[in-house]
Image (cartoon, rainbow, N blue to C red):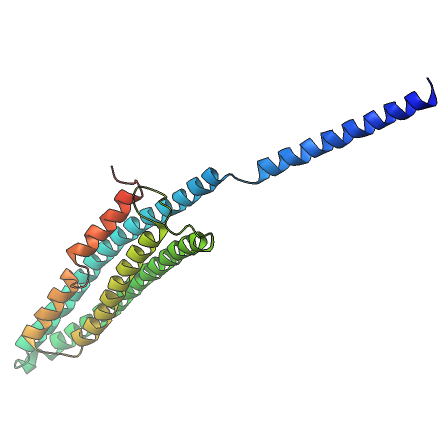
Length: 222
C-alpha cells in the first residue's frame, strides 16, 4: 500500500473515531438532561406530594385537637367541682387530690399543645416547598404555566400560605386558652374557653374548601 493510501486510511480511521466519540457524548447529554416534559412531571409529583401531606397533617391535627379537648374538658370539670365544693372545707384531702389532678392534666395539655406545634412546623415546611417550586417557575419566567389542572404554582403557594396563616392563628389562640384554663375560676368563662378549643374558630369552612381545592387541582381528588 502506498504512503498516500496509508495516510488516507489513517485519516478515515481518525475521523470515524472522532464521530463515534461525538455521538457518544451527545447521547450521554440527552440521557443526563431531563426534557421539559420530564421536569414538569417531576414538579407535578412534588406538588401532589405536598398537597397529600397537607391533607394527612390536617387530619392528624384534628385527631390531636379532639384528644386535647378531652384533657381540657377534664380540667374544666375538676375546676368546676372545686368551685362548687369550696365551702365544704372539711373535705380538704379530696380538694387537694383534685388540685393535683388539675396540675397533672395541665401538664398533659401542655404536651398536647406541643404536639400541635410540631404539626404546625410541618405546615411551614410544606409552604416553603410550595414557595420553592413557585420561585423556580418565576426564575424561568414561566409563572403562568399550568402544571396540573387550572392552577399555577403561585396559586398553590398562596393557598398553602392562607391555610398556614389560619393554623398559626389557631395555635396562638390555643396557647391563650390554655393559660386562661388555669387562671380563671369563672364557670361561664371556663365553658366558653372549652367551646373555643373544640370548635377552632380560625379553621373556617372556607379553609376546608381551599384545602379540598388543592386536592382537586393536584388531581388527588376525582
